[in-house]
Image (cartoon, rainbow, N blue to C red; front, side, top):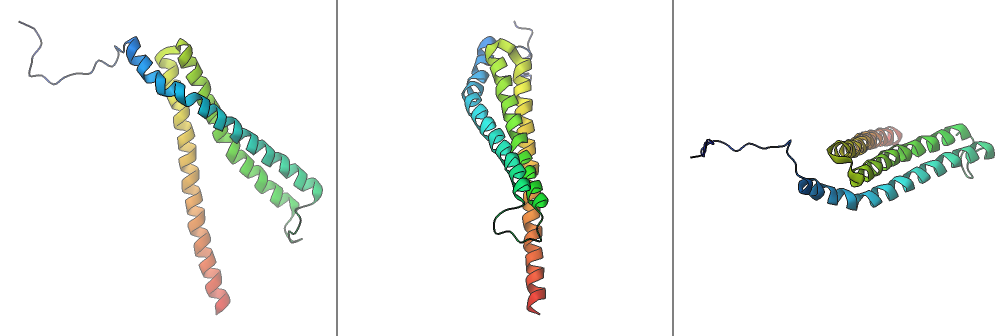
Length: 153
């Protein structure tokens, strides 16, 4: 007769992951790595070109067709800000891809946790940025309605 109680609730043995279990978890990460690296690199390049464009705007004295009241530095600042908004998630994605490469090289559970932490950082940044942009849109619509109502009276 077994010492285990057949009526007891089952327990998970999380610390006893087999090599086959880990390999099953690595497959989706392995398939994600090239795409994360690609999007990360493209994001960094777009951000870098945006920052480079801001330098050009400053030296050119502004953009064609912009009112003279809008200083070139303000436009360039907006380009730098947008560049940073592209570079940060690109860095997170590249760190995620690098951690996946360590997992593939046999880094084990520690690197898998690291990869998932980098992925979490990317999604947290994307989520916070989305909430901020949604708030900005709502505030912009409210401001537009108020300006429109004031202008028509």
